[in-house]
Length: 162
Image 1 (tube, rainbow, N blue to C red):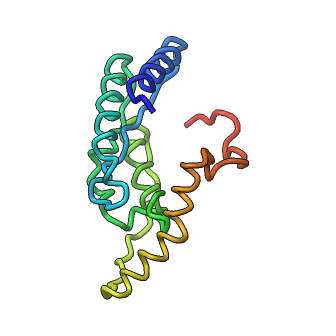
Image 2: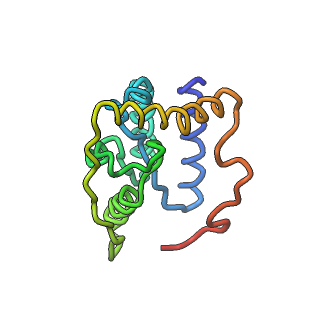
């Protein structure tokens, strides 16, 4: 996929939203540099992020700079699939967004439970199980052009006001 062409379309879409009077909120991508699997995409994500920052500046959009949220390097912020945020991660992100939007009241943040201490063998077993249950199916979906969201209905089918 041509990142420059993708971002040209993104810029045009953000411009149309702003011109229509919408308050636009953009997110950069996460810095997955510490991940042996997703860290390979770090350079491409950094290029994408610079384009998102430029588009936000150009159109006066609010920017949630996820790349710079170092608390998300903590594995407790991630769910068992290691790809999506945990309840702690979602609440933390919600509070970052609410603070940026200067919204009164924050989301309740669940307690951060200690990570289990695993032996090397237990770590290898956990990584093998993760590869089998989550990583491999993710790769297959990408190669076949499918999404884990195919066939799902939207949680909020209509716009929701804060």
